[in-house]
Length: 197
Image 1: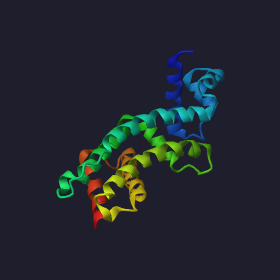
Image 2: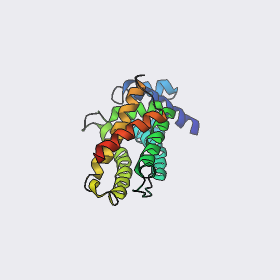
Image 3: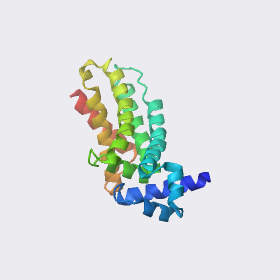
Image 4: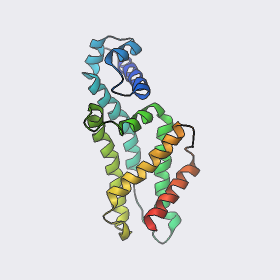
């Protein structure tokens, strides 16, 4: 079995999942699009759920590695322009860049957030999305050790900040907004106003 067969299956599955959703895509459609047989699909991934798990694992590994590298808080509370704002702006720009470079995956990923909680797709995706939230929660925990007014709100801040970024990405998908540095800065400005007002 060739590695490129595995990669072709992943690409075809991602394309179908982003267009039709996980539940709306059958294994037959995946094998037809990839030009393979079902035994080949099962050889690499076990089943459709295993294929989803592999897709999420590979894409989230890349995104979360980037976030881990960026999410380092160096306190400078006396200078607003050197404290939290530039860090959150870097995170926003990194998430936007990832969404642009991996638009099919990110579109599919956002759709998984609206999957029924008991569905297979939601259960597989939850572990990966929670890892992303944990990275941001750790960051806000570091920030709250300096900015005491944020103490006890770390998890909520992580969810809300990522939700704002995802909302902007949805607007971009629908051609109603951009993923520019200005858009990132605007989101961070609004978020900062909310947490410090």
